[in-house]
Image 1 (cartoon, one colour):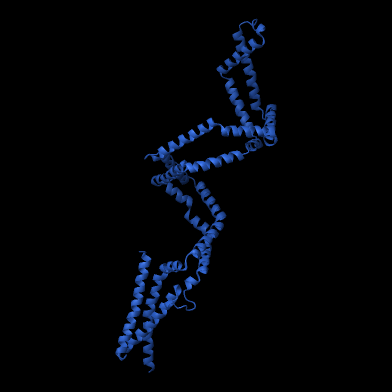
Image 2 (cartoon, rainbow, N blue to C red):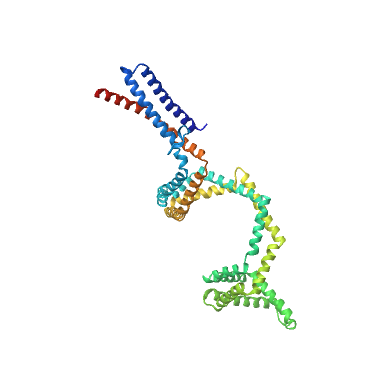
Length: 420
């Protein structure tokens, strides 16, 4: 049984017993004609009964109609449920969830400092890691559900169909081009090409290719070239030197003509991706071909399946590698926070910003939720809940009313004797 119900029942019994006791005392005093000391007892008992009955009426009238009689201004809680619900929601919204109050409490709490202290304890970090591991494990189980797979696959397929690959690629290249990042890509390509040409193996391949080309294009002339292997190697080296010198010149000159040509080529390609129907059609066909390619699809699914299986097996182990990595990362974050006041300040400031941006909508929504929930309660349920919350304390009003009433009765009796 709810302890509140037990306390309410006990205090009601005590308050009722005081009323009955006052009534019995009054009867005994009257049977003794109220003379002598019995006069004082009668005065006490009579006033105590009045006080007890008045306070009983007041307390009962808050929740119900006394004796079931529809007396005006009784059953106040039930009659004013709508108003109480609105006021309760408004009070919580304005007094507990005011933006300034929440921000001030957050500053006093210092979330980043508490997070730092929490994560520095290895046990706490491991507890958090276990929680994250459980979420991961349950998420994997959820995704493995055949019904979820169907929905996800259908949604993914729909998104792929609607995805404008040509425009997206054009926007990506345009973003790179605006900050000249495409030139960085060119630099990397030229650097790798130069590095490849500098190796003896590459120079040997160039020499062989040159020798094969002479054989194919000028078979008669090739027979008159003395020491052809040496000639091919020397010619290959010359070609490699010239190409390497050209690459070095491009890398050293930000305004080199090749860079301008590359920039124009990228610009033209962006325009085609965005506006040339032929190019856009080719990109769309390539996208669909990749999306519908069974080998690629099977390979991707097998990769995802292998990853899922590995994660599930790892998470089921007592000494999970994933769990250990998460715990290590948590401790590392705690250590970083402990040594970086700027990072803690940044986290706190961003959290304050989040509170300032969303507190208004949150507190309004919460106030409406509280008010709406209270209004949906049945009147009897609402009254019972309020009575269980404060009814036990209200019974002390009845007890005090009985005793204070009795004391006032004694004072009034004393005053009447003095006046007589």
